[in-house]
Image (cartoon, protein in one colour):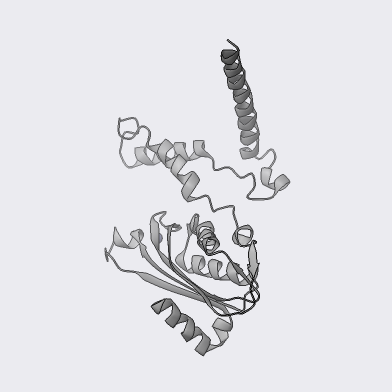
Length: 231
Ligand SMILES: [Zn+2]
């Protein structure tokens, strides 16, 4: 009996809390106030599932489909929940990810290659994906290698351009670690190229960004390139 009551009480509390969150969220989406204005962007931003669901129902109608048929009726909801994940980087920055550093004595180059990523091209909202290779020269501090992969995720999980993604990763490592130089190479396949138009299946786009010494010193840069190639 006690347990049943506790269960009901819990359900009631959860309902009230859910309703309060819903009220705050709808007030925020109507522009009555902004979470981000109070707490700073990123902390309280919520992706609007209802808007995504409504939009995808319209898209299905617009292409001549029946959004209520068996296979499609839950699709807008599935997409909304998927977008929570694949666009989770929109209001994040890599500064927090890269803030936990370790002191080191020497400053030999650190290379991390073949970090896989998935992103969405901002021109077509179709995936582009591939590998990120990073080389940097520390200036007294380094981050754990998993943090580099996390930093890549932050910038990949948003509507993105490969060129900007490359530069944002390089810039984040350069400034957050105050490193002496950074080289970032991205090789990626774009579905907006491969599944439409000229259909160059398997073609890859390569972008490069360099900062600091690795921008100015050509011999250091070629050392970074060869380390990425052979490591
Ligand atoms: Zn595209």
